[in-house]
Amino acid sequence: MALPKVYVSQRILKEGRDILEGQVSYRMWEGEGAPDRDILLREVQFIDGLLSMPADKIDEEFFQQAPHLKVVSQHAVGFDNIDIEAATRHGVLICNTPDVLTDATADLAFTLLLAVARRLVECSGYLRRGEWRTWYPDMWLGMDTARKTLGIIGFGKIGQAMARRGRGFGMSIVYFNPSPKPEAEKELGARRVSLDELLRISDYVSIHCPLTSETRGLIGEAELKKMKSTAILINTARGLVVDQRALYKALSEKWLWGAGLDVFEVEPVPADEPLLSLSNVTVMPHMGSATLDSRGGMSRLAAQNLIDALQGRRPAYVVNPEVLDR
Ligand code: GLV
Image (cartoon, rainbow, N blue to C red; front, side, top):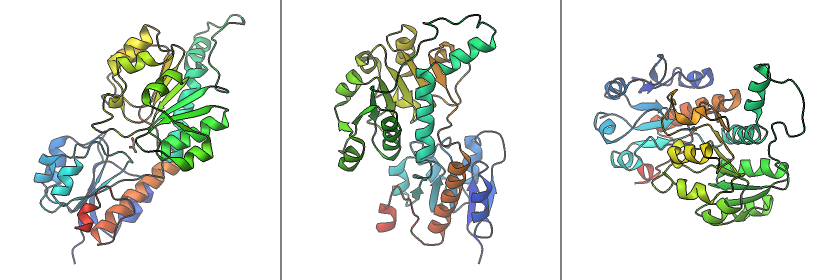
């Protein structure tokens, strides 16, 4: 029997390729960056399964070109690039890769938090430029973490892992989430508050919610104005949750102390993005899950979800189970 046909839209780690080997007949995009849309639309005409990346726009037009497609297995926890409603209508199963990247993403969020708080990148540049000539008591002062309040927007697995890190550093935790999380409240001493209160009382605000129609632009100028002028904003979720122009205004006019950003409205970020000119912003090129263990786990899981769906088993992580259950 012919093997199912699969397209892998960017080169995945060997752990994932080994799982695909012999189970499916697959082609993999080997070019730099994501394949152009016309390439993806051409490939999708022939395939039963796609192993997708967050850069792939998977919408109604895409599904219309894909007569044989049964599954899109996303190599990410977030799936805001996929029109789930259209997928379900077309009977295409959508899978993702949670859990394996929880700790790595929280680690990066906390790394950014500490880097901004202690002005790591600014100080390193100062030293490397040969400007360190003396030591003085108010040189490059930063912010403490102990006894401060960490506000977490989106209290799912990654948000809770961030809270755990904050607790370890002696911070109090508040969170904003559509549903209460009583277990995590008990474990972490976390308190559920309104977004308004979170913004007003937090010394650090870290974003961990998915990008949805409710969270798009959630943090705009009005919300940033509610934050303390000494506060730091961390975003490792999705750039579009924050209004980047408003953030630039807040940071350049100094009514917000600093920001650590791993995600942006447009990625890759254009070199002339105004935020990049600010020294109180620390940036990373969307690296939340970029560790050997996490990316290995994501490759494995994305490949396994794909194969399970194509071989008639229920994949471990399904975003639209209605497709299976109807
Ligand atoms: C990365 O951004 C992910 O959603 O896994």
